[in-house]
Length: 497
Image 1 (tube, rainbow, N blue to C red):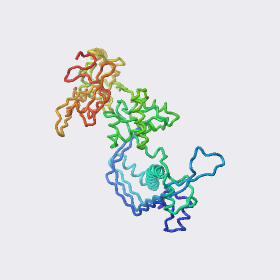
Image 2: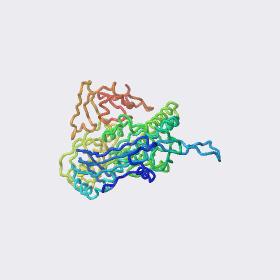
Image 3: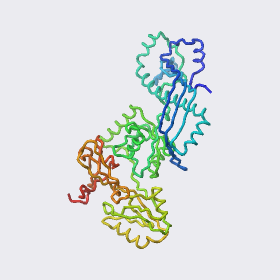
Image 4: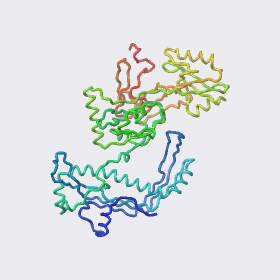
Protein backbone atom coordinates (compact mmCIF):
# COMPACT_ATOMS: atom_id res chain seq x y z
CA UNK A 1 0.00 0.00 0.00
CA UNK A 2 1.75 3.16 -1.16
CA UNK A 3 -1.11 5.64 -1.33
CA UNK A 4 -0.58 9.24 -0.35
CA UNK A 5 -2.66 11.02 2.25
CA UNK A 6 -3.56 14.61 1.51
CA UNK A 7 -5.85 17.09 -0.20
CA UNK A 8 -5.94 18.17 -3.82
CA UNK A 9 -9.16 19.16 -5.61
CA UNK A 10 -10.12 18.10 -9.14
CA UNK A 11 -9.37 21.41 -10.86
CA UNK A 12 -5.86 21.43 -9.46
CA UNK A 13 -5.28 17.84 -10.51
CA UNK A 14 -6.33 18.59 -14.09
CA UNK A 15 -4.22 21.73 -14.19
CA UNK A 16 -1.23 19.81 -12.87
CA UNK A 17 -1.57 17.29 -15.69
CA UNK A 18 -1.79 20.06 -18.30
CA UNK A 19 1.13 22.11 -17.06
CA UNK A 20 3.31 19.14 -16.09
CA UNK A 21 6.24 20.55 -14.13
CA UNK A 22 5.45 24.19 -14.95
CA UNK A 23 4.54 26.47 -12.07
CA UNK A 24 1.15 28.17 -12.29
CA UNK A 25 1.46 31.94 -11.78
CA UNK A 26 -0.86 31.98 -8.78
CA UNK A 27 1.21 29.33 -6.98
CA UNK A 28 3.29 31.48 -4.66
CA UNK A 29 5.35 28.73 -2.99
CA UNK A 30 5.86 25.03 -3.72
CA UNK A 31 7.59 22.70 -1.25
CA UNK A 32 8.37 19.18 -2.50
CA UNK A 33 10.59 16.95 -0.34
CA UNK A 34 11.35 13.37 -1.43
CA UNK A 35 13.23 10.35 0.00
CA UNK A 36 12.80 11.30 3.66
CA UNK A 37 14.26 8.76 6.09
CA UNK A 38 14.02 9.13 9.86
CA UNK A 39 15.21 6.97 12.76
CA UNK A 40 14.07 7.70 16.32
CA UNK A 41 15.77 5.53 18.92
CA UNK A 42 15.02 5.27 22.65
CA UNK A 43 11.85 7.33 22.31
CA UNK A 44 10.06 7.47 25.66
CA UNK A 45 6.40 6.44 25.62
CA UNK A 46 3.78 6.09 28.33
CA UNK A 47 0.03 5.89 28.79
CA UNK A 48 -2.31 5.98 31.76
CA UNK A 49 -6.03 5.27 31.84
CA UNK A 50 -7.61 7.51 34.50
CA UNK A 51 -10.82 5.47 34.65
CA UNK A 52 -11.57 1.77 35.06
CA UNK A 53 -9.70 -0.52 34.47
CA UNK A 54 -6.95 2.11 35.01
CA UNK A 55 -4.29 0.52 32.81
CA UNK A 56 -0.90 2.16 32.67
CA UNK A 57 2.50 1.38 31.20
CA UNK A 58 5.71 3.04 30.01
CA UNK A 59 8.89 2.19 28.14
CA UNK A 60 11.03 3.06 25.14
CA UNK A 61 10.48 2.66 21.41
CA UNK A 62 12.43 2.35 18.17
CA UNK A 63 10.78 4.07 15.20
CA UNK A 64 11.96 4.09 11.60
CA UNK A 65 10.27 5.89 8.70
CA UNK A 66 11.39 4.92 5.20
CA UNK A 67 11.13 6.56 1.77
CA UNK A 68 8.73 9.30 2.85
CA UNK A 69 7.71 12.44 0.98
CA UNK A 70 5.85 15.71 1.62
CA UNK A 71 4.43 18.05 -1.02
CA UNK A 72 2.89 21.46 -0.24
CA UNK A 73 1.53 24.17 -2.54
CA UNK A 74 0.76 27.65 -1.20
CA UNK A 75 -1.51 29.43 -3.66
CA UNK A 76 -3.10 32.84 -4.16
CA UNK A 77 -6.89 32.55 -4.53
CA UNK A 78 -9.85 34.90 -4.24
CA UNK A 79 -12.76 35.19 -1.83
CA UNK A 80 -15.72 37.53 -1.39
CA UNK A 81 -14.81 40.58 0.64
CA UNK A 82 -16.68 40.85 3.91
CA UNK A 83 -18.42 44.24 4.14
CA UNK A 84 -21.06 44.71 6.88
CA UNK A 85 -22.07 48.08 5.33
CA UNK A 86 -22.79 46.64 1.90
CA UNK A 87 -26.22 47.58 0.56
CA UNK A 88 -28.58 45.29 -1.35
CA UNK A 89 -27.98 45.31 -5.10
CA UNK A 90 -24.37 46.46 -4.90
CA UNK A 91 -21.82 44.49 -6.91
CA UNK A 92 -19.85 41.86 -5.05
CA UNK A 93 -16.20 42.61 -4.34
CA UNK A 94 -13.44 40.03 -4.32
CA UNK A 95 -10.10 40.07 -2.53
CA UNK A 96 -7.00 37.85 -2.81
CA UNK A 97 -6.15 35.38 -0.05
CA UNK A 98 -3.05 33.25 0.42
CA UNK A 99 -3.88 29.62 1.25
CA UNK A 100 -2.40 26.17 1.58
CA UNK A 101 -4.10 24.36 -1.27
CA UNK A 102 -2.32 21.10 -2.00
CA UNK A 103 -0.77 19.02 0.78
CA UNK A 104 0.28 15.41 0.37
CA UNK A 105 2.18 13.08 2.64
CA UNK A 106 3.40 9.58 1.91
CA UNK A 107 5.31 7.12 4.11
CA UNK A 108 6.32 4.01 2.19
CA UNK A 109 7.03 1.99 5.32
CA UNK A 110 7.05 2.44 9.07
CA UNK A 111 8.72 0.20 11.64
CA UNK A 112 7.73 0.49 15.31
CA UNK A 113 9.10 -1.61 18.16
CA UNK A 114 8.15 -0.99 21.80
CA UNK A 115 10.12 -2.24 24.81
CA UNK A 116 10.52 -1.76 28.54
CA UNK A 117 7.04 -2.89 29.62
CA UNK A 118 5.22 -6.12 30.37
CA UNK A 119 2.63 -5.03 27.81
CA UNK A 120 5.21 -4.41 25.06
CA UNK A 121 4.59 -7.74 23.33
CA UNK A 122 0.85 -7.05 23.14
CA UNK A 123 1.42 -3.54 21.77
CA UNK A 124 4.02 -4.80 19.25
CA UNK A 125 1.60 -7.49 18.09
CA UNK A 126 -1.09 -4.85 17.60
CA UNK A 127 1.36 -2.59 15.74
CA UNK A 128 2.24 -5.40 13.29
CA UNK A 129 -1.38 -6.42 12.68
CA UNK A 130 -2.59 -2.84 12.19
CA UNK A 131 0.54 -1.61 10.39
CA UNK A 132 -1.45 -0.11 7.51
CA UNK A 133 -3.78 1.69 9.91
CA UNK A 134 -0.81 2.91 11.96
CA UNK A 135 0.92 4.19 8.82
CA UNK A 136 -2.21 6.09 7.75
CA UNK A 137 -2.56 7.53 11.24
CA UNK A 138 1.04 8.82 11.25
CA UNK A 139 0.62 10.41 7.80
CA UNK A 140 -2.62 12.11 8.85
CA UNK A 141 -0.97 13.31 12.08
CA UNK A 142 1.86 14.87 10.06
CA UNK A 143 -0.68 16.61 7.81
CA UNK A 144 -2.65 17.85 10.81
CA UNK A 145 0.52 19.39 12.25
CA UNK A 146 1.33 21.02 8.90
CA UNK A 147 -2.20 22.41 8.56
CA UNK A 148 -2.22 23.73 12.13
CA UNK A 149 1.10 25.54 11.84
CA UNK A 150 0.38 26.75 8.30
CA UNK A 151 -3.10 27.96 9.28
CA UNK A 152 -1.76 30.09 12.11
CA UNK A 153 0.98 31.54 9.87
CA UNK A 154 -1.39 32.21 6.95
CA UNK A 155 -3.87 33.94 9.23
CA UNK A 156 -1.16 36.37 10.32
CA UNK A 157 0.20 36.84 6.78
CA UNK A 158 -3.19 37.56 5.20
CA UNK A 159 -3.86 40.20 7.81
CA UNK A 160 -0.46 41.84 7.30
CA UNK A 161 -0.60 41.73 3.46
CA UNK A 162 -4.16 43.03 3.12
CA UNK A 163 -3.10 46.54 2.11
CA UNK A 164 -0.41 45.29 -0.31
CA UNK A 165 -2.45 42.92 -2.49
CA UNK A 166 -2.60 45.45 -5.32
CA UNK A 167 1.19 45.64 -5.59
CA UNK A 168 1.53 41.86 -5.31
CA UNK A 169 -1.06 41.24 -8.03
CA UNK A 170 0.61 43.70 -10.42
CA UNK A 171 4.06 42.24 -9.74
CA UNK A 172 2.78 38.73 -10.49
CA UNK A 173 0.88 40.07 -13.56
CA UNK A 174 -2.38 38.63 -12.27
CA UNK A 175 -5.95 39.85 -12.51
CA UNK A 176 -8.66 38.93 -10.01
CA UNK A 177 -10.31 36.71 -12.64
CA UNK A 178 -7.07 34.70 -12.93
CA UNK A 179 -7.49 33.48 -9.34
CA UNK A 180 -9.54 30.44 -8.53
CA UNK A 181 -12.30 30.81 -5.93
CA UNK A 182 -11.27 29.78 -2.43
CA UNK A 183 -12.66 26.31 -1.65
CA UNK A 184 -13.58 24.83 1.71
CA UNK A 185 -10.62 22.44 1.75
CA UNK A 186 -8.05 25.26 1.49
CA UNK A 187 -6.27 26.21 4.71
CA UNK A 188 -6.24 29.93 5.54
CA UNK A 189 -6.81 30.04 9.31
CA UNK A 190 -6.17 28.02 12.43
CA UNK A 191 -9.58 26.69 13.36
CA UNK A 192 -9.29 23.08 14.56
CA UNK A 193 -9.88 23.04 18.34
CA UNK A 194 -8.16 19.65 18.83
CA UNK A 195 -4.85 20.22 17.09
CA UNK A 196 -3.09 22.12 19.89
CA UNK A 197 -4.41 20.13 22.83
CA UNK A 198 -2.23 18.94 25.68
CA UNK A 199 -3.33 16.60 28.46
CA UNK A 200 -1.85 16.59 31.98
CA UNK A 201 -2.56 14.20 34.87
CA UNK A 202 -2.80 15.24 38.54
CA UNK A 203 -2.18 12.48 41.11
CA UNK A 204 -1.56 14.22 44.44
CA UNK A 205 -4.51 14.95 46.75
CA UNK A 206 -3.58 18.64 46.81
CA UNK A 207 -5.09 21.72 45.16
CA UNK A 208 -4.81 21.60 41.37
CA UNK A 209 -2.93 24.88 41.53
CA UNK A 210 -4.37 26.40 38.36
CA UNK A 211 -5.34 30.08 38.36
CA UNK A 212 -8.50 30.35 36.25
CA UNK A 213 -10.48 33.12 34.56
CA UNK A 214 -14.18 32.24 34.68
CA UNK A 215 -15.68 35.35 33.03
CA UNK A 216 -13.75 35.55 29.77
CA UNK A 217 -15.57 37.13 26.82
CA UNK A 218 -15.35 33.81 24.93
CA UNK A 219 -17.65 32.13 27.47
CA UNK A 220 -14.99 29.48 28.13
CA UNK A 221 -12.81 28.86 31.17
CA UNK A 222 -9.30 30.20 30.55
CA UNK A 223 -6.01 29.54 32.33
CA UNK A 224 -4.34 32.65 33.71
CA UNK A 225 -1.18 30.80 34.76
CA UNK A 226 0.32 27.89 36.65
CA UNK A 227 1.67 29.78 39.72
CA UNK A 228 5.12 29.14 41.11
CA UNK A 229 5.02 26.48 43.79
CA UNK A 230 1.75 24.96 42.56
CA UNK A 231 1.03 21.32 41.83
CA UNK A 232 0.07 22.33 38.28
CA UNK A 233 3.55 23.68 37.62
CA UNK A 234 5.14 20.52 38.99
CA UNK A 235 2.89 18.33 36.81
CA UNK A 236 3.79 20.30 33.67
CA UNK A 237 7.51 20.18 34.41
CA UNK A 238 7.32 16.43 35.10
CA UNK A 239 5.84 16.06 31.60
CA UNK A 240 8.81 18.10 30.28
CA UNK A 241 6.54 21.00 29.27
CA UNK A 242 7.15 24.68 29.98
CA UNK A 243 4.37 25.86 32.36
CA UNK A 244 4.39 29.24 30.60
CA UNK A 245 2.80 27.77 27.43
CA UNK A 246 -0.44 27.20 29.34
CA UNK A 247 -1.10 30.93 29.83
CA UNK A 248 -4.39 31.75 28.08
CA UNK A 249 -5.15 28.07 27.37
CA UNK A 250 -8.75 26.80 27.33
CA UNK A 251 -9.76 23.80 29.45
CA UNK A 252 -11.50 21.40 27.07
CA UNK A 253 -11.93 18.13 28.93
CA UNK A 254 -11.63 16.39 32.30
CA UNK A 255 -11.11 12.62 32.61
CA UNK A 256 -12.05 12.11 28.96
CA UNK A 257 -15.30 14.12 29.05
CA UNK A 258 -15.26 17.09 26.67
CA UNK A 259 -16.85 20.44 27.58
CA UNK A 260 -17.93 23.46 25.50
CA UNK A 261 -19.85 26.71 26.06
CA UNK A 262 -23.07 24.83 26.84
CA UNK A 263 -21.77 22.94 29.88
CA UNK A 264 -19.18 25.15 31.59
CA UNK A 265 -20.87 24.78 35.03
CA UNK A 266 -20.39 21.01 34.76
CA UNK A 267 -16.75 21.61 33.88
CA UNK A 268 -16.30 23.65 37.06
CA UNK A 269 -17.80 20.83 39.14
CA UNK A 270 -15.51 18.30 37.43
CA UNK A 271 -12.49 20.45 38.29
CA UNK A 272 -13.62 20.79 41.92
CA UNK A 273 -14.14 17.05 42.39
CA UNK A 274 -11.37 15.78 44.73
CA UNK A 275 -10.89 12.44 42.95
CA UNK A 276 -7.40 11.53 41.75
CA UNK A 277 -5.89 10.81 39.32
CA UNK A 278 -7.50 13.62 37.32
CA UNK A 279 -6.61 14.21 33.66
CA UNK A 280 -7.25 17.69 32.25
CA UNK A 281 -7.07 18.65 28.58
CA UNK A 282 -5.90 22.13 27.53
CA UNK A 283 -6.15 23.81 24.13
CA UNK A 284 -3.11 26.06 23.97
CA UNK A 285 -3.62 29.70 23.04
CA UNK A 286 -1.77 31.74 20.46
CA UNK A 287 0.42 34.53 21.92
CA UNK A 288 -2.17 37.24 21.21
CA UNK A 289 -4.97 35.43 23.04
CA UNK A 290 -2.70 34.61 25.98
CA UNK A 291 -1.72 38.27 26.31
CA UNK A 292 -5.38 39.31 26.10
CA UNK A 293 -6.27 37.05 29.05
CA UNK A 294 -3.35 38.31 31.14
CA UNK A 295 -4.18 41.95 30.34
CA UNK A 296 -7.83 41.42 31.28
CA UNK A 297 -6.85 39.93 34.65
CA UNK A 298 -4.33 42.70 35.31
CA UNK A 299 -6.90 45.42 34.59
CA UNK A 300 -9.53 43.69 36.73
CA UNK A 301 -7.10 43.36 39.63
CA UNK A 302 -6.01 47.01 39.44
CA UNK A 303 -9.63 48.14 39.53
CA UNK A 304 -10.40 45.73 42.38
CA UNK A 305 -13.48 44.68 40.46
CA UNK A 306 -13.59 41.24 41.92
CA UNK A 307 -13.03 39.23 38.77
CA UNK A 308 -13.84 35.59 39.00
CA UNK A 309 -10.31 34.38 38.50
CA UNK A 310 -9.89 31.50 40.87
CA UNK A 311 -7.68 28.76 42.13
CA UNK A 312 -8.94 25.33 43.02
CA UNK A 313 -10.12 24.63 46.57
CA UNK A 314 -8.26 22.38 49.02
CA UNK A 315 -9.56 18.90 49.70
CA UNK A 316 -8.11 16.52 52.29
CA UNK A 317 -9.06 13.02 51.22
CA UNK A 318 -9.36 10.50 54.05
CA UNK A 319 -8.07 7.03 53.14
CA UNK A 320 -9.78 4.35 55.20
CA UNK A 321 -8.24 0.97 56.07
CA UNK A 322 -10.49 -1.87 57.26
CA UNK A 323 -8.57 -4.26 59.52
CA UNK A 324 -9.87 -7.82 60.05
CA UNK A 325 -6.55 -9.57 60.67
CA UNK A 326 -6.11 -10.19 64.42
CA UNK A 327 -2.33 -9.74 64.24
CA UNK A 328 -0.82 -6.57 65.75
CA UNK A 329 -1.00 -3.53 63.49
CA UNK A 330 2.75 -3.06 63.32
CA UNK A 331 2.38 0.74 63.36
CA UNK A 332 4.16 3.16 65.66
CA UNK A 333 2.99 6.74 66.08
CA UNK A 334 4.60 10.06 66.98
CA UNK A 335 3.29 13.50 67.86
CA UNK A 336 2.46 15.81 64.97
CA UNK A 337 4.60 18.96 64.83
CA UNK A 338 1.69 21.18 65.87
CA UNK A 339 0.43 18.66 68.46
CA UNK A 340 -2.86 18.40 66.58
CA UNK A 341 -2.78 14.61 66.53
CA UNK A 342 -0.45 11.68 65.88
CA UNK A 343 1.37 10.67 62.71
CA UNK A 344 2.66 7.32 61.47
CA UNK A 345 6.28 7.18 62.62
CA UNK A 346 7.18 3.70 61.45
CA UNK A 347 5.59 0.75 59.67
CA UNK A 348 7.16 -2.48 60.93
CA UNK A 349 7.28 -5.54 58.74
CA UNK A 350 4.67 -7.31 60.87
CA UNK A 351 2.23 -10.09 60.09
CA UNK A 352 -0.92 -7.99 59.71
CA UNK A 353 -1.94 -8.57 56.10
CA UNK A 354 -4.48 -5.74 56.07
CA UNK A 355 -1.81 -3.18 56.98
CA UNK A 356 0.61 -4.75 54.51
CA UNK A 357 -2.00 -4.46 51.74
CA UNK A 358 -2.84 -0.86 52.68
CA UNK A 359 0.84 0.08 52.53
CA UNK A 360 1.19 -1.57 49.11
CA UNK A 361 -1.82 0.40 47.83
CA UNK A 362 -0.49 3.63 49.29
CA UNK A 363 -3.41 3.99 51.74
CA UNK A 364 -1.02 4.29 54.70
CA UNK A 365 2.48 5.80 54.58
CA UNK A 366 5.10 7.00 57.02
CA UNK A 367 4.19 10.58 57.93
CA UNK A 368 0.43 10.22 57.38
CA UNK A 369 -1.81 11.85 59.97
CA UNK A 370 -4.20 9.53 61.84
CA UNK A 371 -7.64 11.12 61.34
CA UNK A 372 -10.27 8.63 62.58
CA UNK A 373 -10.66 5.40 64.53
CA UNK A 374 -13.93 3.54 63.93
CA UNK A 375 -15.45 6.72 62.53
CA UNK A 376 -14.45 8.88 65.50
CA UNK A 377 -12.23 11.91 64.87
CA UNK A 378 -8.91 11.82 66.71
CA UNK A 379 -7.72 15.32 65.86
CA UNK A 380 -7.63 18.31 68.22
CA UNK A 381 -5.49 21.20 69.38
CA UNK A 382 -3.06 21.19 72.33
CA UNK A 383 -2.74 17.41 72.50
CA UNK A 384 -6.48 16.63 72.70
CA UNK A 385 -6.28 14.73 69.40
CA UNK A 386 -3.41 12.59 70.71
CA UNK A 387 -5.36 11.84 73.91
CA UNK A 388 -8.41 10.73 71.86
CA UNK A 389 -6.27 8.40 69.78
CA UNK A 390 -4.59 6.82 72.82
CA UNK A 391 -7.94 6.24 74.57
CA UNK A 392 -9.58 4.68 71.50
CA UNK A 393 -6.61 2.39 70.83
CA UNK A 394 -6.75 1.22 74.46
CA UNK A 395 -10.47 0.42 74.26
CA UNK A 396 -10.89 -0.63 70.63
CA UNK A 397 -7.36 -1.35 69.36
CA UNK A 398 -7.59 -5.14 69.64
CA UNK A 399 -11.19 -5.44 68.48
CA UNK A 400 -11.87 -6.61 64.93
CA UNK A 401 -13.00 -5.28 62.56
CA UNK A 402 -11.16 -2.00 63.16
CA UNK A 403 -11.49 0.93 60.78
CA UNK A 404 -8.80 3.64 60.76
CA UNK A 405 -8.55 6.68 58.51
CA UNK A 406 -5.43 8.55 57.38
CA UNK A 407 -4.76 11.83 55.57
CA UNK A 408 -1.59 13.20 54.02
CA UNK A 409 0.49 15.50 56.26
CA UNK A 410 -0.18 19.19 55.89
CA UNK A 411 2.95 20.50 57.62
CA UNK A 412 6.41 20.80 56.04
CA UNK A 413 9.55 21.27 58.10
CA UNK A 414 12.61 22.53 56.23
CA UNK A 415 16.07 23.61 57.32
CA UNK A 416 17.52 26.41 55.18
CA UNK A 417 21.31 26.60 55.23
CA UNK A 418 23.58 29.37 53.99
CA UNK A 419 23.67 29.27 50.17
CA UNK A 420 26.67 27.47 48.68
CA UNK A 421 27.34 26.56 45.06
CA UNK A 422 25.60 23.41 43.84
CA UNK A 423 24.76 22.38 47.41
CA UNK A 424 21.61 20.36 47.81
CA UNK A 425 21.05 17.61 50.34
CA UNK A 426 17.89 15.80 51.17
CA UNK A 427 17.75 13.57 54.25
CA UNK A 428 16.52 10.03 53.80
CA UNK A 429 13.43 10.25 55.98
CA UNK A 430 11.63 7.06 55.01
CA UNK A 431 10.32 5.09 57.97
CA UNK A 432 11.19 7.80 60.51
CA UNK A 433 8.86 9.90 62.62
CA UNK A 434 10.40 13.10 61.23
CA UNK A 435 9.06 12.32 57.75
CA UNK A 436 5.64 13.37 59.01
CA UNK A 437 6.70 16.85 57.99
CA UNK A 438 8.63 15.96 54.79
CA UNK A 439 11.88 17.06 56.47
CA UNK A 440 14.56 18.37 54.09
CA UNK A 441 17.83 20.18 54.45
CA UNK A 442 18.36 22.29 51.33
CA UNK A 443 20.52 25.32 50.72
CA UNK A 444 18.71 28.55 50.00
CA UNK A 445 17.76 31.91 51.47
CA UNK A 446 14.23 32.94 52.45
CA UNK A 447 14.90 36.57 51.62
CA UNK A 448 15.97 35.81 48.08
CA UNK A 449 13.34 33.24 47.17
CA UNK A 450 10.12 34.00 49.08
CA UNK A 451 7.52 36.71 49.53
CA UNK A 452 5.19 36.51 52.56
CA UNK A 453 1.82 38.17 53.13
CA UNK A 454 -0.57 38.39 56.08
CA UNK A 455 -4.25 37.50 55.76
CA UNK A 456 -7.25 38.94 57.63
CA UNK A 457 -6.71 36.47 60.49
CA UNK A 458 -3.11 37.71 60.89
CA UNK A 459 -1.76 34.41 59.59
CA UNK A 460 1.51 34.65 57.68
CA UNK A 461 1.07 33.13 54.23
CA UNK A 462 3.47 32.33 51.44
CA UNK A 463 2.58 34.93 48.80
CA UNK A 464 4.79 33.98 45.90
CA UNK A 465 8.13 32.51 44.87
CA UNK A 466 10.66 34.94 43.48
CA UNK A 467 12.16 34.02 40.13
CA UNK A 468 14.90 31.81 41.58
CA UNK A 469 15.12 28.10 42.24
CA UNK A 470 14.40 27.80 45.94
CA UNK A 471 14.37 25.23 48.72
CA UNK A 472 10.70 25.54 49.61
CA UNK A 473 9.55 25.27 46.01
CA UNK A 474 11.68 22.14 45.57
CA UNK A 475 10.05 20.64 48.67
CA UNK A 476 6.54 21.21 47.24
CA UNK A 477 5.51 23.96 49.66
CA UNK A 478 2.57 25.71 48.00
CA UNK A 479 1.53 29.34 47.63
CA UNK A 480 -1.01 30.12 50.36
CA UNK A 481 0.57 27.78 52.92
CA UNK A 482 0.80 29.26 56.43
CA UNK A 483 4.12 29.85 58.18
CA UNK A 484 3.70 28.47 61.73
CA UNK A 485 7.20 28.37 63.24
CA UNK A 486 10.81 29.49 62.72
CA UNK A 487 13.55 27.68 64.66
CA UNK A 488 10.84 26.03 66.79
CA UNK A 489 9.42 29.46 67.74
CA UNK A 490 5.72 29.81 66.93
CA UNK A 491 4.95 32.70 64.58
CA UNK A 492 1.27 32.14 63.76
CA UNK A 493 -1.68 34.30 64.81
CA UNK A 494 -1.69 32.90 68.38
CA UNK A 495 1.88 33.98 69.18
CA UNK A 496 2.64 37.34 70.77
CA UNK A 497 5.81 38.13 68.79
